[in-house]
Amino acid sequence: MNTGDTAWVLISAALVLLMTPGLAFFYGGMTRAKAVLNMMMMSFGAIGVVAVLWILFGYSAAFGTDLGGGLLGNPWEKLGLRGVLDTGDGAPLVGSVPEVVFVGFQATFAIITVALITGAIADRAKFGAWLTFAAIWVTVVYFPVAHWVFSFTEDANGKPTGGWIGQGLGAIDFAGGTAVHINSGAAALALALILGRRKGFGKDPSHRPHNLPFVMLGAGLLWFGWFGFNAGSALGANAVAGYAWINTLAAPAAAILGWLLVEKIRDGHATSLGAASGAVAGLVAITPACSAITPLWALMLGLLAGMLCALAVGLKYRLGIDDSLDVVGVHLVGGLAGTLFIGLAADPNSPAGGRGLFHGGGLELLGKQAIAAGAVMLYSFLAAYAIGWIINKTMGFRISTAHEAAGIDVSIHAESAYDLGGRATGSFQPLSGKRPAAGQSGTDHLTPGRKSATQEATVDA
Image 1 (cartoon, one colour):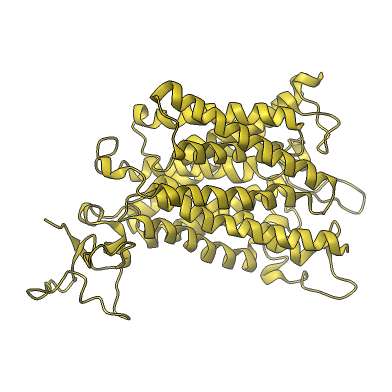
Image 2: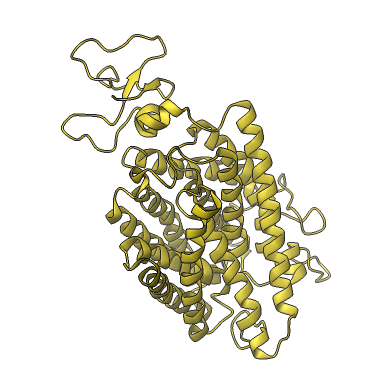
């Protein structure tokens, strides 16, 4: 065990966990004023659901002994983190850090992956249905895919026994372009199709971001945490971490300029929303490639990702797909760009050691990257669509039209983010049918301890 490496991975784990509240601000600012709390609640709900399942069996399913074919770890092997909690001289290690530290670090990746999906279903998803989806999807999709990409093990004879993408195929994904971004982006697309478009999609100006300072704050927190996401994946305080760190600075910086350039040419304005979104697009793209390409190529990748994602986001209106907060346009497109770019620009002298097309490696690595990206995208989309369809047909996934019109915050959570002059953003009618007395506001009856998420909303005149 190396104490310096251990300290860095612990700090990195805290940085990555901070990304989920950062995402809550980023997404929350992009929604309507009467949906911001629900948006944030879905991110915090992801922390609760995923962390519990990760400790129970998720870590074991992702990093336990392979059950065959590099598809899944044994979920019972380390059930409840059995066998990884020894803190003495014989503590199990992953590289030079205690395995229990690695458990915590990887937990934060699982959490942020699930939370990312929520941006595609803003303002119209039942909270209970979302938590149900999150629990099933992380179990059926994320845990196995994390095993495919991140599990590197060998048997007593030195034979590889890890995941089929990272160790078997030899595709490069340093910190989660496939497992995190393509995975969440494909699932987001599936749910956007299941839930359908918001009322007034593309026409109602109230769907514009309500708090751009929140968006900028969220983007800043995401970028701050992303240094733990990428550089922390070196699992050590070393030169590899530094290599990933500088690329995590370079790509999003260039992506901001790329996105703003597209906005200026297309719309005539460079916006704060575009700057924040461009930074995230660059962070997404560099995630799989941060140990495989030089900083100069990272600048090129960032510029390309910023431009591609800005153009992709605009397609949702043409296609009629209500990817509310641009998860597909940023995370799926950005993840694909970064993953495939490795096949072009991977430098054999980089920590990853791959040789891309531009360095005389031919099309071999590009083919591997395409197989990895395509497999994760297809599996995640089909599984998410099936899970979402079943939930929609059983418990229902989308809120009622009345709830949506009144505002999902007040109708589902019995709360309002902004109490402007004592007026709430919606009014209530309890399930009993009893209306508030004359002179009583629609939320006065919601005294502490009596808030209910099942009360029926009525539309304010």
